[in-house]
Length: 224
Image (cartoon, rainbow, N blue to C red; front, side, top):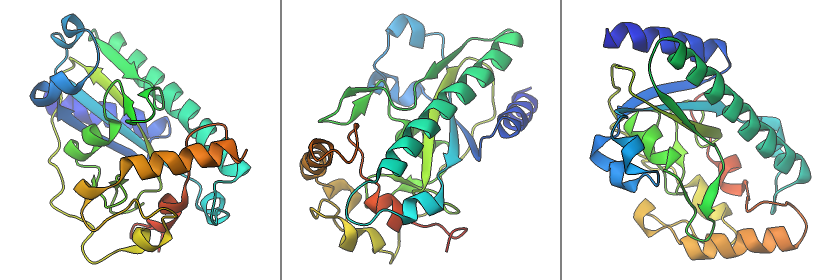
């Protein structure tokens, strides 16, 4: 049953525009999900969906985010929310519960914390690894992706995390304008990154705390 549901859900997600699809169990880190525990008691799985960003739009970025990237970022987040909604409807039609988590609803911008970590779900679901730039790095698309999560009790086959890392690639280190990216992902300077995002917003480049410089630099095998 788990494999059949997995295959059908993956097919539906792909048909609706998802480039990436993966599943993990959430029991091991349910305390890191900022939702009512009574809801989480009924949930077993996290579905991670990803879509690729427009490479030409990213290529326009030099030393600051562009208005075009800002609009694209918003459009992709809106698409992801609609995608998660449609997949949620499919799951509910099958008689199971599903809870879509917004792609970009931040609870605390300074700590860059949402209701849950889309990145952690994606990594555990086998969509990529934790990069030096503090983003998910997918083998095919690099960090040029956006993610959304659906929590569900539909019984599903789970994916295995990738046993890969950034290796010798350090393309993102040299381009970060504040040196927030270090050799180890664990040493990423969240505060320096946030302060630069705040500066970009104050300068009028964007109305959200976004950058895109290291996203542009991080290209997977399918984009090189």
